[in-house]
Length: 129
Image 1: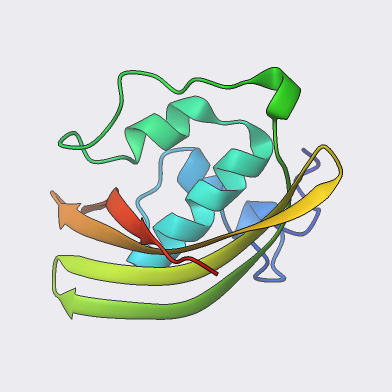
Image 2: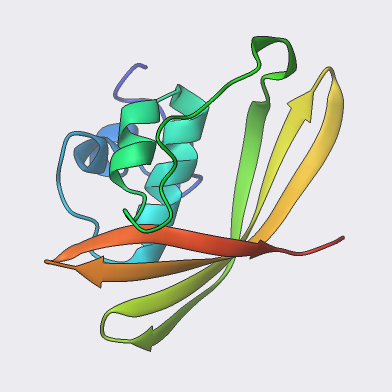
């Protein structure tokens, strides 16, 4: 990815000023920042980052992809970032994507935990739309 392009997560900042440093190993300052960086990692196909930012208690051993049904991610809207306490937070978002030319939406409220100064994705509830 060209580093001076807008970040896929939709903040309007460049990739190098937004999710790029997190993908390179910097810790996310908030659960929302981690969630945005995970969306960008899906867009960019950064499976190692997705697994590393997933809490060990719920992380799969690997990510399986069906190349014939691979989504093309087309946008992210963060609806809410709710700190629960100093080390727990929830982020509600809608991610838009296309599969086979058909537009889809993923509306989820994700749970995050901070351990050792690092935020991790734990799990989420998908909202039926």
